[in-house]
Amino acid sequence: MTTHAAPDNSPVVSMDAITKAFPGVKALDEVRLDLYPGQVTALVGENGAGKSTTVKILTGIYHPDGGTIRINGTPIVLTTPNDAAAAGITAIHQETVLFDELSVAENIFIGHAPRSAFGLIDKGEMHRAARKLLDDIGAPFSTHTQLRDLGIANKHLVAIARALSVDAQVVIMDEPTAALSHKEIEELYELVDTLKSQGKAILFISHKFDEIFRIADRYTVFRDGAFVAEGLISDIDEDALVTMMVGRSVDQIFPARAHDVGEEVLQVVGYDHPTEFSDIGFTLKRGEILGFYGLVGAGRSEFMQALFGITKPSKGVCKINGKISVIRSPADAVANGIVYVPEDRGKQGAIFGLPIFQNITLPSLARTSHRGFLRLAEEFKLAREFSQRLDLRAASLDQDVGNLSGGNQQKVVIAKWLATQPQVIILDEPTKGIDIGSKAAVHEFMAELAAQGLSVIMVSSEIPEVIGMSDRVIVMRDGRIAAELAGDDLRPEALVRHAAGISTTPQQQEA
Image (cartoon, rainbow, N blue to C red; front, side, top):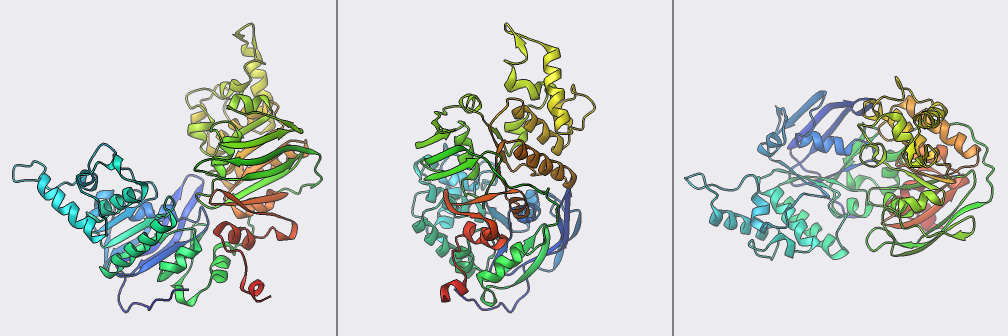
């Protein structure tokens, strides 16, 4: 473990008692965060802990409902990203928007290029300034190079140079190594050391414990939108950090379930994708709820989309009831009894602008039409049946899905696919963004589906949900299956350890 000395100075940024709420959820509840010059502070927490909301507040995208932000001891209000840039705060995101048709220098200074006395872009000064920024971070390529001619790692250096072009004193790195090779990650570590030597205060967000303990000086832990702890990395180990991340009680009541399952329904063997996942294989039985857990970039959703035919794997075999099924499209998946409720209801699940009944019956038009003509009465009958089964709360079935609450939108999407009478239903983050009452209803209905013999695959980032609802859990990391857990092995610490690549405890190592 790398150790670092504590700074004898004051924080550049202090966030105190920051609160932020969205409809149905309190994203941040009086959290605090301090960032020190010349130091890396790792912000640690599960998915949904409040890390992204904190970054958006610091960069002026969100405005907090309460609390105070201080820059060098002076209170400041960040109402726009321009305010954050003016205050010396910049962010390097996992997926920074860059432009392939522009040069490196143009990408670095887009939106704030140096100007001549006549108000025109001073290209000579722009390239000189870009060259200096690239030299500071050890980037060897020309400022005149078109971005399209650079590899992923060098594009990442352009994004970093762009972030530093605003003369930042605070640099936020949000999952910066997600798309980098091992060599490129080592080069990024060297860059972080350079930024530290320049006195930059760095906020580092990563799910990878080896990275955190390699470059961080301090840590701050959030859990469920609340501050848990902070301190020096040299004073903590992986065990303690994991415990702080997941050490909550399960505050939701999950429905009691009989865990008797039937025969095997689905078998997946050797599913590969060139960039997203590799060697995925498992079985699923009738009446079983199989959980999939993993951190950002684990490849869970990407695999589910391939299983449903949205994307195409490079190889792999899918067997349904013992027979090989070729799934090249969602239509093939539905025909074989597999349906998928996506995480993004707005873009992939429901069709806003259409009424509830048409959303529900859309995949089942063969059942509600006759000789090519839709039968409205049949559509309403089918939609009414499944909206009642899910206790959908709406003024009428004619209501626009876009005007429903998040929980009821989720119920519409589930109803849509249940109406196709599937054997396997994939639920990707089924309770994301919905209130606790709606979560309980979705959990209850999932239990009912399993009791009726439907096989359920549930992708979830919420540890209590994964443990409370699943018969077995498959943990994914970096596109591969890291572990399969059940029974007494299905514990919060075990999930996080396998997801973060921490395979053994110190006690196990001693044994």
